[in-house]
Length: 274
Image 1 (cartoon, rainbow, N blue to C red):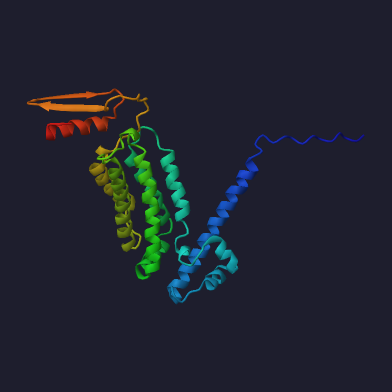
Image 2 (cartoon, rainbow, N blue to C red):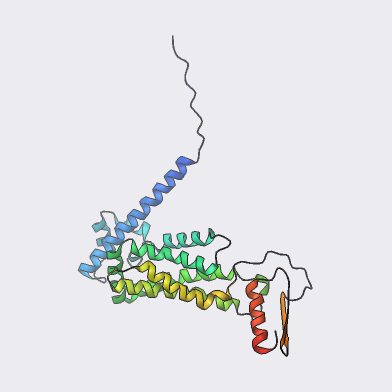
């Protein structure tokens, strides 16, 4: 007797195959980018940067010229295959930051993704560093990559000031930009020192030391989060303070950020007015 046909079992995760396929495609794309970059680096080292062509890079990697241009717009871009992905990872660190974490600490964790990228292949990173010192075009490309990280971190730090307190004479936007630049500069100082040492040394400890200096310098002026309490029209400033003789009187709303309270009191103690 014939057996009844079995009903196919419904998938409990219909999106899983598509997600897995997307992950495999991304991994293959990154693998090809790195292979092209490795081929480019080897040719630059043996033939010289100017003498190397895109066709030669593609041939060395075993792919067609059109495949090269699916991954990179130029041979300069092939030197930095991981910056786009690293920027995405750094932004993911910022987006997933716990509410209690100081924003400067979050930014420092974010830029560590860049160091991880370099530390994953020390020999390649050292060779790339030496090459960028010799070729102005590559140096300009590297500077442009650094600027992208600075913009990301500046936007993040600005988000941790009270948006309602951005007005003429307020230094919060300046502080956010300077602090973001300081984090990137501290990271790059440690990175260059590590690269000049041939990719050897405890770079994690060196980074933490550099970031501690940045935190001490800028951390007290940056709030840990925006105030979420509503503010009605016509309300006065969040904090006021006045000093008369030996007495300082400060009045603050309960939703006033602590760092704003402290800045107001400090100004009043130093200048006699808020």
